[in-house]
Image (tube, rainbow, N blue to C red; front, top):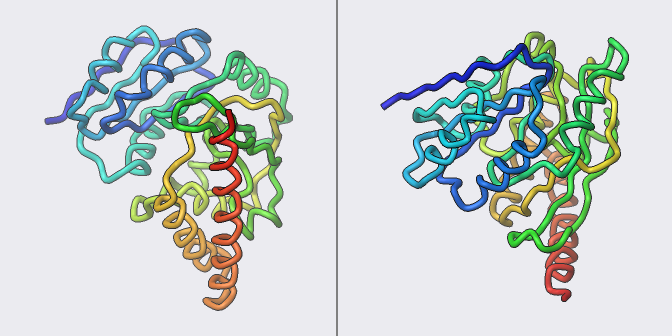
Length: 262
C-alpha cells in the first residue's frame, strides 16, 4: 500500500530528508530537535519504507514540522533519499538519520551558512558528534573541512547535516541504490573535482555510533566506489581497505573505552 501526505509550506531554503524504517526508538528525539528550531525557510521530508512499528504514526502526529511524508516500500536508504530529492523544493538539501538529532542552533547555523557563502559554493560541510546508543557520551567529533585529495583516499567529512546545493544532483545524478553503505561517498567522488565547499566548524548534529558489521560493509563498498570513480587498481584498493580496517579497530576500541568511563 502506498500512502503520501503533503503539508503546506512556504518556498523553503533548506530541505531536510530522513529515511525511516521501524525507527520509533529514537525518531521522537529527531522530531523534537527540529520542532524546537522550526523555521519557515526549512522543510522536512520523511520517507518511510513501510514501518510496522509506530514510526509512521509519530511522523503523522508531527505534521507541524513534517512537510512531506511518503510511505511506501523502498530498496533501502539511498532509494528513500532519491525519493526525498525528487520531492524537495529547497535550494539546499541535507540528510539526517532517524536515530540522529540536531543540536540546539544547528538549523540556525545551517541557514546562516547558506545565506553567507559565495555563489560558487555548492557544498557546506557539517561537523557532527558521534555519541553512544544511550546518548550519554560524545565518543568523538567528526569536524573536517572538504579536502579533495583526502576524500580520494577515504570519507573524511561528516555527512549527516551537510548541505548539498541541488545543482549537484542536477549535474551528477542521484544516489546509487545498488550500494548499501557508501552511496553518499560514491556521489561525492563523482562530483569531487567540481565541488566548491564551505565548512561549519560547530557541530550541528549528533549521530549514534553504528554497528561494526555495517562499518565493515561501508569500508568494502568505499574501495569499490574508489575503483569505479578514481580508476585505482585492485591492489591499491586492497591496501587501503586493510589500512582502513586497522584504523577502524583502533577507533572502535577507543570509543568503547570512552563509553565505559563513568
